[in-house]
Amino acid sequence: MYDIASTILTDVLGQATTAGAKDANRVIGAGLAMGLGGIGPGIGIGIAVNGALQAIGRNPEAEGSIRTNMIIGAGLAEAVAIYALLIGLLILFV
Image (tube, rainbow, N blue to C red):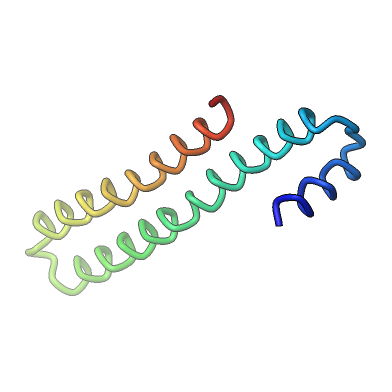
């Protein structure tokens, strides 16, 4: 699979050396790691905020505890995006 992707990438980018293809694969891999790693947290935070707003609309007295739990959950979801960024940077520079 890697050989097929490398061959296609070499043809598309017009690079004849394998070192150039490896660099191009690194850039694409880093982009995919960050792009795909950011989709999940984005969707998760959107769903969490939606649920929190609906809960606050139904029970305004519980706003403080709902907001606190939503912020903790959003922080945990953002940690996944930060890990994806770290993996993307590792793929790109190491």
